[in-house]
Length: 201
Ligand code: URA
Image (cartoon, rainbow, N blue to C red; front, side):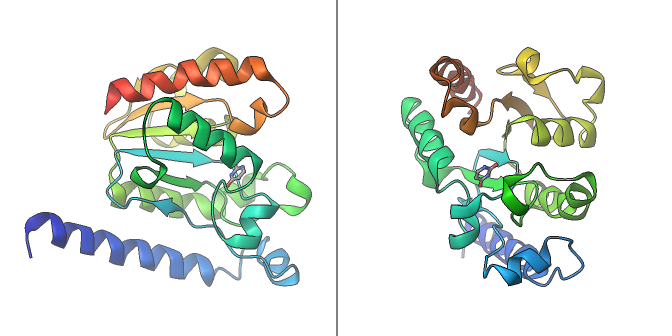
């Protein structure tokens, strides 16, 4: 086994641990919803040695029914954006801060973010992406606070497409793809901002 292969195995093992712990997270306020609706938690998907990690907010209904991140309408837009910069989805890693679906797609609550965020931190630590791309304001605010960029925080309309340097990765905050479902103008903005990702890998 060469060095890269054993690193990949170690990452697979660590990520499996994260998955198993989220599966067993009965103390989460969203666990009862998972069971009641026969939903799955959505842990994350993609390359375990990805250079780019995308972080959304929380699973929607399609995602909770399948256990896969960004597989509904917002996911189609994410796929279109990745295609526009010639990056294959299988080569990036896609996850969310909150791993279970909040009822009726409401915004995640602070205590929900607090419960799931340590799993996200571990995913970042294990995968070690060169670039973290946040999708929407919740993941932007969390990552900027957590990784020493809180002084730079502003609204997403100001920060989108800008590159920040955290200790171990570059951060690019992006609008959430769902915001472009009803707003073609934002789709154009997202396409422009995605070009920035391409310059960083
Ligand atoms: N929106 C998100 O933030 N994450 C998903 O996985 C799907 C929709």
